[in-house]
Length: 448
Ligand code: FAD
Ligand code: NAP
Image (tube, rainbow, N blue to C red):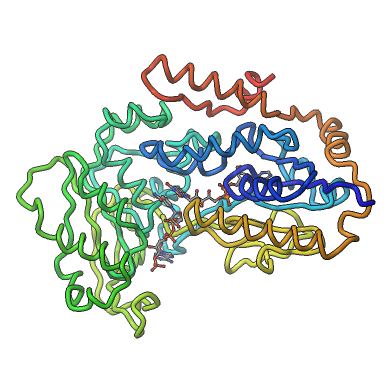
């Protein structure tokens, strides 16, 4: 008789937890170990989702139930690529699932991108959400104009955090260090610059509506950007139609309102270079684009000879995340920034799911569906290939011997619960739902 499957999952974000959830549901008996680089779980649900969107974090309750299942073990503070390798995991487990996300940012590759105060949205998100290594990013909010490149929901999140009254943010789990900086912020205008048009904007309606309704902030569009939109509106898909209608409606709505702050989406512009003095950015030069192609969704931005320069004391690049290869044995697609895989399958017993496999797009629901699909593939493979779980495997005992040699303090689920309690108690004292710990040493101290 075959032994029961021993499964390791690398990454405790939505992809890892949802894959574990389906496997637990369908396998009669199994052992699932979830390895996480940080002492704390939940990936981008903790470190990405905006602090003023607490309802999205309710998925943590589902993940907690999964982690507390008797067949599941959370093993925090263990990094694949640093403490353990794919080879180690393959030796220890029948099935290895890589769900380690996409933790780098894409850049523009234009002159001046290395100036001070040009930062990736990813690091700013990490700064306000408590990523330990983003606590001290060199962000300077002592400037009136911020420019964000990219028009996805991450760009909108960052714009909203920069423009929201601090009194509102105080009630969230935003980090105290960012709250202090934001309360001194001089930013009055945030430009949100897209290379294509309103019909191609990547942000979604709920997020746009929030911007339009933001207290003491007026959304200002450029009327010229909307030429031809009304004419095609009836041919659009329902979500595109609704968001386009909202944009058209807000073109003139509230234009007489006096507000302290402005949110200015600008379309059809490609950043060409940052301009500044002594590495300090002061302007950005933008080229004007026209769109080429028949299908509205796939139209390409083509640069024309026209350009303009706008003031910019803070430049934020929000054109997507990307993943990295963390083990030499893995084949990596550098262009897409993902692990090479075939619907989640990498090789015998080795799988990838979530952003590391699909690329950095999609909400938690999309990631969940992807993980369920990959888990189904694993179940089929277990059923169809009796050699996959034939051999008995040592599981965590083997990995633990490797970690012991490195004196790694493995953080268990109960240890995380101590950190969780500490954060909630600290937050309570200052009227916040939680004050996140941003120092790994401190997390480990509380966990031990
Ligand atoms: P992640 O969530 O990134 O999880 C990967 C995990 O792997 C992390 O815990 C990481 O620490 C761990 N890890 C990394 N490297 C290693 C290693 N070497 N060893 C061990 N562990 C490792 N979706 C929504 O539905 N609503 C939202 O409001 C929303 N807001 C978002 C805001 C931002 C800023 C971003 C970037 C995304 C947002 N999303 C939102 C999308 C959502 O977060 C993703 O769909 C989802 O998190 C992807 O899950 P994942 O598990 O693939 O990656
Ligand atoms: P995204 O939605 O893919 O948006 C990326 C943006 O960058 C697009 O506007 C894209 O324009 C632009 N871009 C890409 N390459 C560019 C380049 N070289 N030059 C100029 N612009 C460029 O990515 P994201 O904002 O990082 O979000 C990632 C995922 O997380 C998305 O699925 C998003 O919905 C999700 N998320 C959801 C929420 C939420 O639900 N509230 C919050 C945050 C994130 P083109 O279209 O022209 O390529």
